[in-house]
Amino acid sequence: MPKRPILYPHPDDHAFLRRTFMLVMLAMFLTVLFFVRNLLLLAFGALLVAVLLTVLAGFLERRLRFSRKLAMTAATLILLGTLGLLGYLFYAEIAFQTEMLSVELPRAWRAMENRLETGPVGRLLLSSLQNRATVTWLTNEAGSILRGSAIVLFNLIIILSAAVYFAADPARYRRGLAMMSPPKWRALTDRTLGEIGVALRLWLVTQSVSMMVMGALFAGGLYLSGVPAWGALGLLGGLAEFIPYVGPIVAMVPAFLLAAAGEGNLWGVFLTYALARVVQANIVTPLVTGRVVSVPPGWYIFLILGAGYVFGTFGLFFAGPLAIVLYTLWVALYSRATLGDEVETPSEYAARRDGNGKTVADAELSAAEVERPLPDRP
Image 1 (spheres, rainbow, N blue to C red):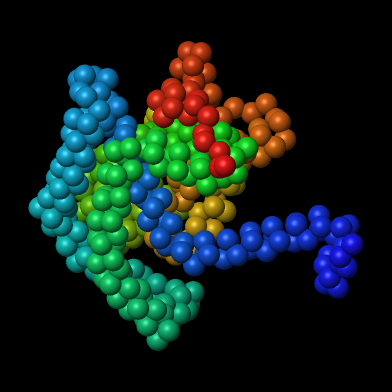
Image 2: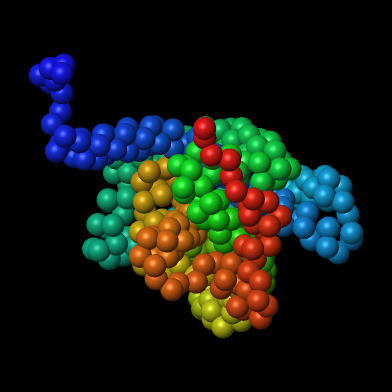
């Protein structure tokens, strides 16, 4: 019988060494993900656009009886045309009001300075805002925004290009991701990816509707309140709805600053945003988000902060869909598959709201041929 090597582990240590190895590999994997986080964020953005293209193509297939290829081509052209139209409207109409806003805001700030200088607390606040460190920080941030605009444009081109490929054959990429998991978990991985797709699709559609409605409410209210650049502020308010909780608060600041300086009715601005929130809570949200599994607000707040910390300012724009993805993973993989809790997945929740017996995920899984067993490694 050959002699066992001196450094050969004892059989009782095999389980401990295996777990240690798995933890080391997990740590290495998370480290790699951290260093390529910006690339992952671009891929996630491409996934969101691909989901939007899939929704548009599905609508054209159902309503106009288009073939799959024709519907996807038309959806891509519609998306590009919409982006081009928005760009034209921005530069032809909104740009004028934005330029007006850039003139009115400094004037409003000077009027605010005059009011603050009348009291000791106001003078203290002004001195803190006007110190060298604050001015330097504002200058650096302005320069960063200008430099980042070119990067955002380049990233947008990458996202749109990748989204077209993702939307053209989503089942191929989905099955490829499922094949990366161990053989016994591939079916569960594939179903979970389907649930994520359903959740993102429902969230994206309802969020788009909410953004348009809220933007129109803000623009109309600010126009009636006599606030200059009401169109730009309404557009800003609508786009800010994409960032839950944080975005709407930030979007209100310019309008209140203008109204406080006499450029519009302050009470009108207050009523505009207050009534818009009431309409959103009692009419818009029940109508357009009734089929979406809602994420608890506490999760949203910390996920927004976490996205900003990990991905920077650009990550805040994806905090909403990232929260949807993480919550769906929690429900599908941990609560249901690990603990066995009787919790509803996004597709089951949507099916119950629709009143039919078949879940949305079942339809998408069938279309992607996920019922067929995935091939195992030899």
